[in-house]
Length: 208
Image (cartoon, rainbow, N blue to C red; front, side, top):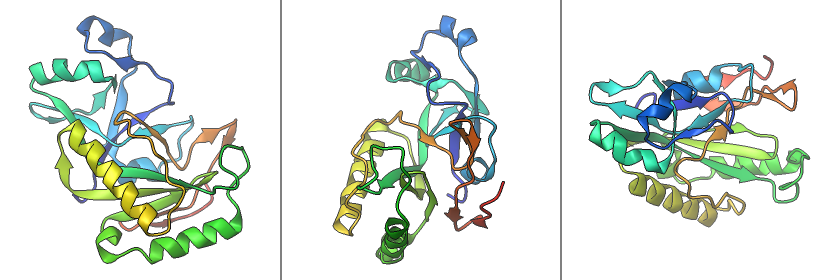
C-alpha cells in the first residue's frame, strides 16, 4: 500500500452514524484523503484522523460520516464496509502523561533511539510524528484489512511487540473507531506544527 487512506474529522466530537439513512442529512461529511496529504496539511481546526475509510461497491468514498458500530450491518447491506490500511499507536512520556506539560526532551531523544533500534520487520512502513505528550507511530500496511476484529487483533499484537522492544508507555485502547489528532492543527487556540517523519514525505518542516 503506497499511500493508505484516512478519514478526516474536523474535530473529534462529531456525531457518528448509527446506520439510519434518515440521519445522514444531519451528519458532517468528512473528507477521505491519502494519509500523506492528511499529515502534511496545515489544518485550521483541531482535525483528527480516523485510520480507516468507507469502501463502497465502486471503491473508496470521497466523503463519509463518522461510522458507529451499529452502522456496519447497514453498510454491509449496501455492499460497502470499513477498510483499514494503516495503524496508529500513541507513545507518551510517562512523567508528563495525563498533564498538559509537553514530553521532556530527554524522553524524545530516547524515543528516537528506540525507533531506530526496532527490528527490520517493524521498520517496514513505519513513520512517526511528535505530539504534545510524546509521539505517534504510524504503520502503512501491506494489505488492506477488511474486518474490524482483524484490525483490533493487529493493533493489540503490534502494541505487545512494541512493549517488548522498550516502548513501555503505549496506549491500551482497542476501539476501532478511535481517531488521532493530526500533527498540524489548531489546538487550544494555537496552530501546532509538529515534526513528522514519514518515509514517503521526507521530514516536513517544523514551521507552518
